[in-house]
Amino acid sequence: MVVQTTFDLDEYVFAALRAGASGFLLKNAPPGDLRRAVRVVAAGHARLGPAVTRRVIKRHAHPAAGVCGLDTLTPLRTRDRRPGRRGLTSEEIGARRVVASGR
Image (cartoon, rainbow, N blue to C red):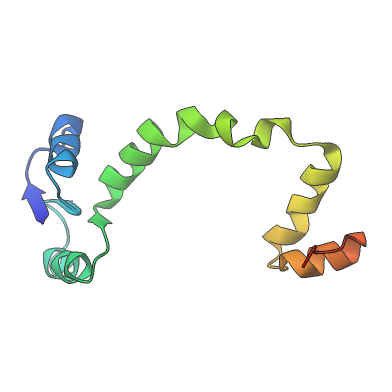
């Protein structure tokens, strides 16, 4: 289900998602977005408008950031994140660090 509304309110977004919507767009979305959203949702994926996506992430992802342990990384682990940002695979990073993959 895709919901399209003029009301840019969090309670509408979250109520629609709880009711089973996989898409939520505002009526001021660019032409064609509704058609694309219906196709994306019909393929089994989700489609939220950009402003809605930002609010969902802000509300649900950022408060839990400390839960994943990024704030407690050791200096070695922090250093290991840099090559990953350059697109290296885990095996390539391990080879540079002389770490076995355990396979």
